[in-house]
Image (tube, rainbow over all chains, first blue to last red; front, side, top):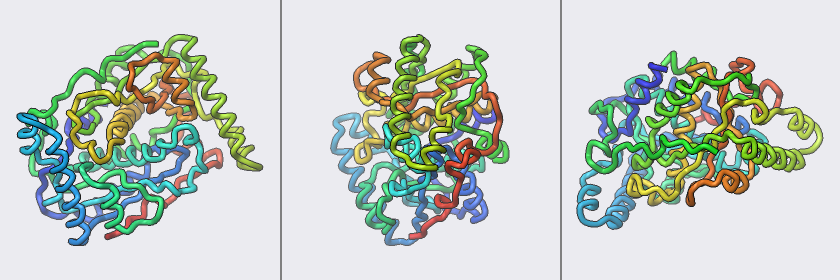
Length: 202
Length: 202
């Protein structure tokens, strides 16, 4: 558990990347590991789109910039100034970028386990992303999850099969810096608290 | 990465538990580790309820049994016979049971990163559960995620603060068996496939 703890402490949402390439064999290994993630009914609904073309990347970046400006407009005063100074995506430099979808139309798993809580299918994709995050970190790579995007716009730009829902847009590459504390904490936006550590007993 | 791979290969959704207790110090260590999970805007929205009372456990079990019967009614022929033979929860024997919620009312994180995809708050709870899953496994413990439940009924029975949404009901304890392949695969319900390994390039 000590090794896992080190990995968890060092896992960061990375937004500052070096631009040098990631070896293809390493990318393949990471995607192999992802297949071991848990999924509801063993449905394995994660679908990866590797975004390489300049056109697709530009669309994603434009969506991020528009949504980020809109988000900024929702803050005031010091909080707005703080927000404006945050770097919230590594889209400018990350050598690898993946859009990760949930295949809402998959028959795999035969619907088991998701009758009363259908979101469990999307949640299976989140588990897969977390595996990728840890596996990348174990190899010294950094991953950044970009959620400030219009999912419709990104989905349309990537021309994916019907029924795929965007869960995450990921930047992957070698981190430019190493930190044991979250960037949002270092920049004064939000530190960790004990709110989620209190356990109610019933 | 080799150690992480072993952990991922051995991680199972466990439904067969021994009934002997889990040391309290170990439970505390696991919950400490969970706090290192990633979360949108560093919101840490996971909330744990430890379900100990016979009354609350009986309500959860009744909800599982009703929902599981309903699910069974949706299958026919061989598939129904197969479903009826599956053990889909360890509620009968798991010494530790946790309901895990997302605090939809939390101000932590100041809303950052979830303007366009509000589900990212729930997804942060899923990441925390995955950390618990791996950490438990690293200690030889097994975790089983029960999703065949009526979330309204379980939430009402546990008397939690307003705004909390049920994400998962977890059984935790020492596994009665060790397996490197999923139980759903061993029982012929659903094996792993390569559907999620194919990467589209755009």
